[in-house]
Each structure stands twice: as C-alpha cells, then as structure tokens.
Amino acid sequence: MSSSSVNHISQPCIYGHFVSKTTERKSRLMKWLSKLFKGGSSNRGQQPQFLGDENMVWRAPARSMDDNSRTSKEKEELDRAIALSLAEDLKKPKGYRWRTDQDEDLARSLQDNSNSSSYPPKYAPSYAPWEYNPNSYRKCSGCYKDIVSGNYLGCMGTFFHPECFLCRACGVPITEYEFSLSGNNTYHKSCFKEMTHPKCEVCHQFIPTNGAGLIEYRCHPFWSQKYCPAHENDDTKRCCSCERLESRNARYMSLGDGRSLCLECMESAIMDTGDCQPLYHSIRDYYEGMNMKIDQQVPMLLVERHALNEAIEGEKHGLHHMPETRGLCLSEEQTVTSILKRPRIGGRGLVGIRTHPQKLIRKCEVTAILVIFGLPRLLTGAILAHELMHAWLRLKGYRNLSPEVEEGICQVLSHMWLESEVMPGSRNMPSTSTASSSSTWSSSKKGGKSQVESKLGEFFMHQIAHDASPAYGGGFRAAYAAVNKYGLRSTLDHIRLTGSFPL
Image 1: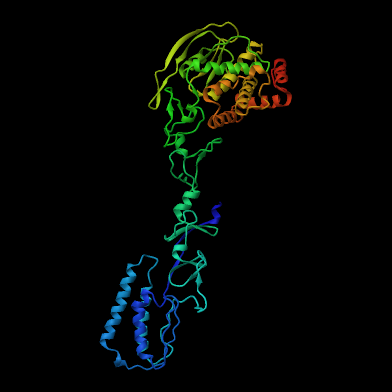
Image 2: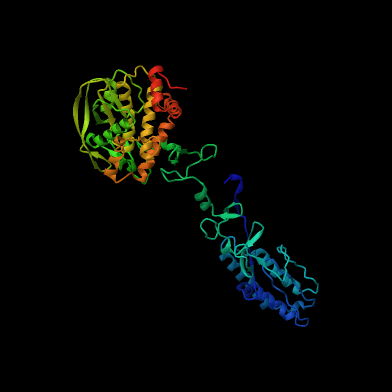
C-alpha cells in the first residue's frame, strides 16, 4: 500500500442534525417560536415549517402586530427558552453541538420580525447549504437508508449516520476528529497504524522512525524476523544455531560458553559424544553409499567451545576456518577434553556437565574429528559431513589444495547430506542399501523429523548457499556448479589432477 494513497484527515466531518416534529429540540426552543407565530397567523392559516436546524424554509405570514401586544411575560419566557437551549447545547460532546450563536440570533430576529409588517422577514438563516427537497432525504452511505432525523455526519462528499461511519479494521464507529483514509476505506488512526506500521518481533513495539522520518528496521534474510536496528548492539541474545534474536516473550537457553540456543533448536540438540555416535556412523554410511568409503576408524569427539579453540591453536596444517569454528579435522596428536556426560537443564542454563581428557594418537593422516557440543542434530550432521570430507581428501592423497577448492567441495558434501535429510528421495540420496541408515537415527529417536527440524535443515542449506566468504561461499558455488555439470566423481578426479574445479 503506497503512502500516496493514504490520507490522515484532521477534523474532516461536518456534524449536523435533522429535527422532526417529534424531536426534543422542537419541544424546547422551536416549540416556543411556533407559539409566537401561532397567535399572529391565525387569520392567514400559515405556520413556519421547521425542516431541520441547518436547513430551514420559512413561509412567514404578512401581518401587522401591535408593538404593545408583546407582554413582558412573553419576553421573559423567550429569554428562558433561549437559555435552556444554550444549556442543553453545552452538554453535548464536541462535534455534535448546535450552532447556538445563530440560534439566539434567529430567535431574536423572529421576535423582531413578529413586530414588523414587512414580508419576507428581515432574517434568513445563513447556514442552510442544502436545498430542501420535500420528496427526498439524504442517504447514509453506510446503511444506504434515508437520514430522516437525528445526528448525521458529512464526509468525503457524502453523509452517514454516526453509528454507520465505521472503521474498516475493527468495525467500531469513528468518533475522533482525525482518522485515516485509504482509498474509500476509513480507519481509526490507531487501527491503521496497527495494520500497516511494522512491529519489532523482539521488543514487540512499533519500529521507530529514523532521523529522516523513515521506518528503518533489520530483517533476517531467511526467517524474515523484523527488529529494531538497536537490538543488533544491545544485549539481545542471538541463537548460535539459527541466528534468530531472542524475543521478549521467549527465553533462550545459555550453553555456558557465551552461546545461547533457542527452544526450537534445543529440541534436537546433541549434548555429548555418546549421543552423537549414531549420527556419526550414519554419515559414514552415507559416504560409503556414494562409493567414498572412509577406511580408517577416525575418532569423533563432541567438545566444549574453549577445547575446540585450543585444538585449533595446536593444529599446524590445512587450516581454513570460519570466524566461529564449529568443527575441526585434526591431523596432529593432541590431548582433547571431550564431553562425557550430557548436562542437565537448570533454570535458563545447563548444569552438571562432565568432561574427560583424551589423548589422540595419530595413526594416519587424520587424528580425530571434533565438533562443538549443543547444536541441533541437522547442524551437527552438516558439520560432520563437512569434516569427514576433509578426512576423505587427506586419506586419498589430495594435497596442497587452495582454501576455495578444499572448503568448497567439503561444503558441497555437507549441502548434499542436508538435502538428503530434508528432502528424502532427492538426487543426492545414495542408492545403495548401505546408506539406508543415514536418517534412521533421527527416526528412531524422535519418531521422524518434525516440521520445525525440517525448516531448520532448509535454513542450514540456505546458510551454505549464501555464505559471503570467498572460501566457504565462493568455493561452494564454484564446486556446486561443477558437480551439477560434470558429476561428483568427475569433479573429484579433475581436482586430483589440476587442483581446481572443471569449468
């Protein structure tokens, strides 16, 4: 909805009133004025016709009245009627009041005219913009019925009963002086803002305007989570898995190492090395199903964040790591502290975590595979698929590859495994029976992947495909294009011979 089609109107309505012969208004001031004429017009048989407070047509009789015939009692009664009318008017809400200054002038003018023999009368109402048609009434544009008596509103070149001038959003009558207009639809200003002004999905407030008066917000490219720019620099927590910011009405789980996990990612999080073993073996089966069997029994450990960082510092060769490294394929002998027992959830964090130092002896080109703990099953599996490809390349004699080539082809295998999990039956699903267990672990533990977990898998695939780094992002896109064009086996053969992707 473009801003040019939305008008915010201030004091747009003319409030008027039709008065019939039975209304209270006539019973006050106008009844008294009728009485004034009744006595002097009996000879001619004509009476004034009251068609409405705003729209009046007068047929005043030609007559002569004695100036002395007006008694002081009648003057007092006239003044009293005017005072009562003014008092009633002051009780009405703003916007529905009578035009009392002209009422008083009208009454006094009629009093003067009744003492004169001139015809027509000296005074004519100055606020009768609508020519009276005795055969028709104004029609309400809300209910399409005639406006016969009572209050009415004039707006947008048409008229409404007050109860028919409704907000399109909430259906409640609009009584404020200001309202919003979009096309032919009317809205309370608050309803229109609620409907069109974006709200922050973190603090749940309307996103404020910037210095230029424009609504500025941030939006996650996958989840479409909209939030105020200020939340990028305040203490708002971000899930270390799905990257969504913590909402004020939700609580993230602290992993104790500066990372936080949302509850959706927490549902399938893997917390210790024993829990991860079935997933690790299913991914090895996935490789074997593509005729890429890893012959060596490479140890796999789930570790804490600081233990992974220490292992990275001790590694000397083949490092092409992201700013936040979540997995590592070791080629050096090290002692690494792994998580032995799954921690418990206590309050908003994890308690009771037990670790165990483990000496890793190098028996081949690959010493071990390390993965950070506490990530969802699909993300943990994607990291394992990536690191297993590093292991396969080293065990098969691929040497001195550039970061773009090595990380790119490892990301392709990670993406392929995710696709086989999220979209079973895809072209990347191995056809051999040995790979049939690649998704068995999830099914046996959870009874099949939930819709939430499948959406997470799509996000992890999106992350790989749209990575902005030259090695992981650019390398993946070049490798993915080569595999799509020539197939995985031909691409790997070309990398072995040339150290680059086929064009």
